[in-house]
Structure formats: C-alpha cells, structure tokens
Amino acid sequence: MICQYRTAQLVGKAPVASSYGNRREALFLITGHNILCLSPCAWDDHWGPQQQIISRLAEANRVLFIELPVSPLSPFTGWHKGTWMRQIWRWHHGFRRGDKPKLMIASPPPVFPFRYHKLTNYLNQKILLRYLESAMERLGYKNPLLITFQADSGALVRRMNACAKVYYCTDDWSASGRWWQPAEKVRERETELVKACDLVFATSRRLASRLERLGTPSYFNPNGADFELFSQAQGVEPPPEISTLKRPIIGFVGMITPHSFDTDLMFWLAKRHPEWTFVIAGKKLARDPDLSRLEQLPNLRFVGFQPLNMLPRYLAGMDVCLIPLRQTEWIKSAFSLKLFEYLGAGKPIVTTWTEEFFPYQDLIYLTRTYTEFEQCIVKALRENTPELVGRRMGLARENTWDGRVAQFSKIVQAFLNGPALASAERKRRHEASLRSIHAGPE
Picture: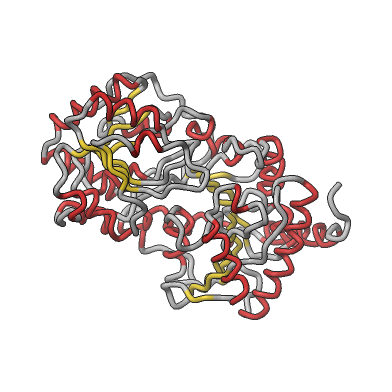
C-alpha cells in the first residue's frame, strides 16, 4: 500500500547480512567470548540496537558494556543535568551488574568536550584506553571481541588487542546538524575507525554502501523487533490514561529529536482533525524541538517516556501508528526502530518517505507530502482488517532481533574461523598502533 512512490534506488553493493531472521537462525550465537562493547548511550536509556544486540550476546558470553562518557559540555548538548550527574556518580562507584549474569556495565571517566576534533579525540581515547585496560585486567578479559557503536573510537580501537574489531553503525552521525559535531570532523574520525576494524555492520543500506567504500567488509543488518514482546499488543488492555480518550487514536512511540521528528507535520494534522486524538509516547531530549505549540492542542496528549515492557499496552490503544520523519540528511540513512515494532503489534503504519522502507511498501503507507500523509491515515483507518493485521505480524516475525543477532554471530564467527593471514594482519596493525601511541595527533 502506497500513496505515491518512485522506484527504490538502493545504493551500493554492500553484502546483506540479513533481510529476514527466524527462530531457527536465532539459535546460533557466538559463545564463550569476552565481549567489550563501546555504547553511544547508557544501558537504561531508550533501548536501541546496542542494548538489543548485547542483551542477547550476554546469554552466552561475558560482556562488559561501556556507556558513553560525559563531558563538561554534556548538560548543554542533550543530557539532562540529572542524567549527567547520574553518570558521574556511576563512574565513581565502578561496575554494576546488568540483568544477565554475564553482563557487567560501567560508566567511564569524564572526557574533554568536542570529541570529534583531532586533539581532544586523541586525549579522550588515551583516557579511555587506560580506563579500559584497567577494567579488563580486573575482570580477567584477554583478547576480547571488541564491538563499538561510537564513531569517534578509532584511535582507541586501533591501539587495542582484540580477536576481532567490529564497528556497528546505527546512524549517520555526521548528519546530526549539531554545532559541536562538525560533519567533516565526524567523517574523519569515522573513517579512522572503519580502517581500524575488521568488520562493519550498518542498519541501513545507504550506510553500508558508504562504509564499504572505505575498504572494510560492511554488512547491512537492519533494526529488528522483539516480536514476542510487541505482539502482546493484540491481547492486552491499554493503560487508563489513553483507554478513556476519544477514538480514533493516532499514535507515535519513540524518541522526539530535532533531526528526525516532524513537529510541523504533527501540528498540521492535529489542527486539521480535531475529531482525531493524537498520543505521543516518547522521551523529550534537553535539546528538544519546540513542542510548546503541540502541548497546547486539546486533541494531542504527551504521555512521556515509557519502559520497553509497557509499550505493547500503549500500542494496543492506538488505531494508526505514525513515523513522522523530517526530511533531513540524517533520515536519508536511518532505518527507524519503530517499523518492525509497530508491525509486530499488528498496527497500520503511515510514514514519511524514506528509501530504506521501500521494500516493505506493500504493508505500510509511504507518503511524500503532508496531504498524502493525511489521506493515508484516513485510508489506514478504513482498510484495517484481520487479514492485514496477520500479514503485518508475519513480516515482523521474520525480522526479529534474535535473527539479526544470529546473522551477526555467523559473520563474526566466519571471520574468527578465517585463515591465519587475518590473525597476522590484526597483529601487524596492533604492533603499528603501539609504536605510535606516544606520537600524538598529527
């Protein structure tokens, strides 16, 4: 189902790690490793690919999950003051156990701001390297499998000894539009990282294609869904705060960020349709887009950030789910987490156009204009049938996080089982990096 579209132009020739996952694939995991993960967020932040992947790998491997370090600039760049202070407190108190017996979580020491600039990046990576070496010695980690989600970690990754070095790219960090992350500096640091790694995974075709051109094998492995969790939306009662609202309820669940969430579209829709109720369940960042005019609308409700296990209940109360994307450079390389989560709940989806969603056009409504977006909501309300619900859920069942992690494991295991030449090349890179550790930035 699509209101208007052009032929999909899927860029590049990067290998596809997985278009679909299934329960049989989900049985395969790399096992018995010490895994070091460098995350772009805290473990208990909004759950994204890093937590979904690591929580599954921790079933069969020892994992040390390193949260993103804060800096003195953090309270002014998106971290709420309370969150910033929490991370400082966590660093001071050391390791904490995760929800899996083999999972340990740590907040590293604060670092200098402007982490993508060459000099501060060099200093920060030295700080973090010393911290990680001490942490791994305390935990008895040797020759770990290193998985980094941090695009600025190239200097650190290059200097670490690991059985395999993996960059897992979830977004085009150079397209964030933030003044403290100049695009050219982000690309420079990310290029350094890709060249220091053995494997690269990316959550969109566009990202995988771009990173492949830097010379490291790159695999498209899109975001998935926890089908067992989100399918519960078909059999639970909505929470009281939305069960009493006027129907139909048009909903959004996710992060509210200035580079992705189209506040103008939401305002336009709510003003044109006072007979619809709009519900937004998501976390507002400190650098929010201006939401004040949305908050004043009588038919639009913010219900705040909700724990992951509560989301099926909120989705149960929604008649149509939205992905209102701003048309930015960031979005061109994004693969929204919400796609398969909404489908897993069986809900009709109306979304702004994105090339990454084109392969799923038969079960979602892709739109290019505000008018088309509005028309497709009307169409989705009218066309929602049990047969379509079943097809949506079937597609989500084939695109689970279990399947994604299984494909990731197979590719990493194949690399680890590779010829001795790969091991020799990793040793050569490590020795070269050690020789330059005191040289400083060029």
